[in-house]
Image (cartoon, rainbow, N blue to C red; front, side, top):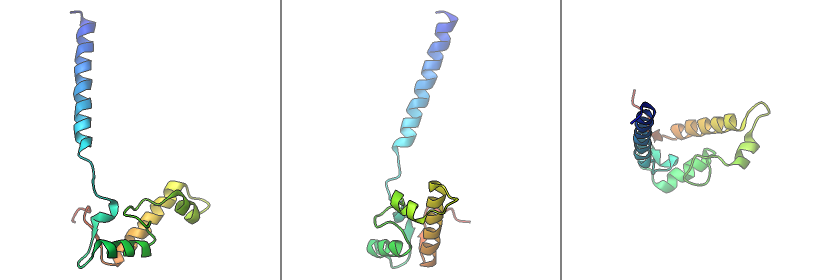
Amino acid sequence: MSRLQWILLCLGLLLTGCNTTVLVATSVGETKHHLEYNEKPGWTSETRRLDSAECGGPPNESIQFGSNAIKAAQRPEETDRQTMMRLRKAWHACMTEKGYRDTRAVPQ
């Protein structure tokens, strides 16, 4: 076996191993909607959905703002991403004021 064939074989095995690792690592994905990570004492999924809507969140179980909502709230100097991040930050602050706690947050 020539040196080039040996290198190609090693690279092929290395890449195959990395590919398998990535597939295994990403196959255990997030199954909850973002809203489901927000909890407070005495809540139900319906009260959480209503509270989310009062805080300006979308009418579904997601915190993903649609392009129409982003365009409506967008300031002249903002990109779509900046507007979305501002809306999400305001939503999160409102939900926190209502007593919700994001269970993904790392305790300090």
